[in-house]
Length: 322
Image (tube, rainbow, N blue to C red; front, side, top):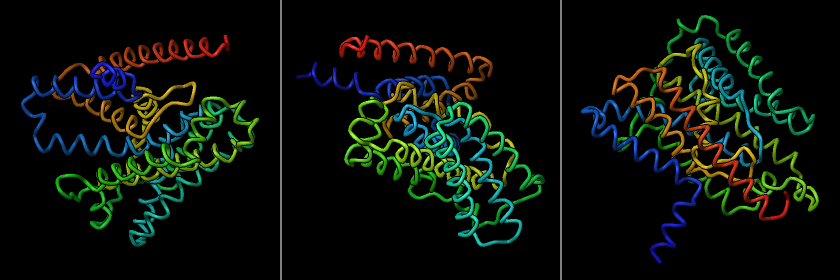
């Protein structure tokens, strides 16, 4: 019985991410006197929560067998829209709604290009990435002089029971997404479309609508991540969203997603994002060379992808596809 439980735990998609997070917490607890300090834990929250929220969208796409390289520009665009409307003295609810709408529109464009026009997601989302960055900087090219109102900043600063609002939002979204993926027919369809596209078409699943909705959700959550990050730093920054697409992809893969589609979970996205934050935190607290962080991430990513490729190959052999 114990072996059966252990076997199931080890073979869960999220196991690697949980194990890596536990290892980093152990290293940091032993190697740094300030890891458990309130300021450091607050910093971890402020980094993990927005990245995890954006990783939810990337996880849905990876489950479908796709990805989005433009979430960084969508994040930046939402922050700049919020900054511009703040500068024009719009009320906070209008600022937040407009910023979220900008993300939903960006996601819709990606969804239309990939699902209806059948453009390769690499080409489509690189193109919209450049468009998003250009629009963001055009909207608010003097962002360094913009400061958000205290009401807007409260979104990023307020804590309840020791957790920021952004962390509570992340947890609520994680629970909601977990329920959606596990217990709804639409959620289960995502896995089926990603795991076997040919079969999904034969039984009549409209994968275009499913994929469009997945891209729209990804854009919306990228904008939400941008709003939360901008509120935390109290000003829109032109560096916001830089490299976040790779952070989210790596977080999802570490958390159990597969580039082949058909795998992934909300919990995996959370633990993957936490792993990325802990890794950065380790290099900062232990004063290690930042260049080595890229090496470590690269080695871990290659190892996990190789393992994922091996498991997919083994699965295809088992069902007689090769």
